[in-house]
Length: 274
Ligand SMILES: Nc1ncnc2c1ncn2[C@@H]1O[C@H](COP(=O)(O)OP(=O)(O)OP(=O)(O)O)[C@@H](O)[C@H]1O
Ligand SMILES: Cc1ncc(CO)c(N)n1
Image (cartoon, rainbow, N blue to C red):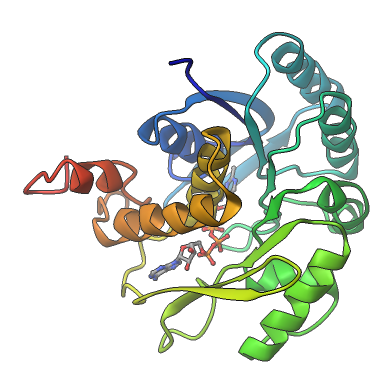
């Protein structure tokens, strides 16, 4: 069996819970060989973001060429892209190398409020990157900015999903992590024809740092393995649910999720924490 390979194009989170680190851990847990192209270095921990140091677009382009010319990823995901220049480079290279299994997680703002995408890059994402996406996975505030509409109700989430499919993205998942705390965690999936609702109980915890990165990395891992988008998204939901439920409780603030949990449960380990 030849190993399947996935590439993440994202920022580094020194705290290890989000960004490149979350993506690589998720790829590894789901049996996929992980590769990375860094867009920025963040000084970050469970308390917040202490610094953001973007790379030059040229450095991102070179990394994408290195991976594209030799290793040939079976799926690619994007996370923090920071600037319009980096967004354009990623879109150009995705076309050049014909990366069709492209998962776009339109990361914009860290949970503590630090901007991870410049405001002027939002339109660049809509015009250049979303048309290339197999799956796009915004949370509710990101979906609002991408569609220029306010989202409070489920109907509005569905309307935003319709608008996002019109950009050319094949599947849209509007994640429910940011919905009201009294509601279950429902992710709305739209394929241009039908809506599906992936629902799980909302876990009462503050340890949700990197949930979106982990979820979209799991989707990319599924696509890399040749699964359908539906199956990849369903497995991603189970992966993140286990990772949140069996939280590691490390750091003084919003801690990371437990990337070991999904596989440990499958192996039937008694205590799911390592
Ligand atoms: N408290 C929770 N309980 C259960 N599931 C959750 C909870 N919070 C988030 N999720 C799930 O985690 C996934 C990521 O959703 P979320 O909306 O938190 O993404 P995000 O805001 O992009 O995350 P981040 O920016 O921290 O990486 C979704 O599948 C969502 O349903
Ligand atoms: C590097 C990075 N990417 C994405 C997020 C969003 O969770 C984060 N906090 N940091």
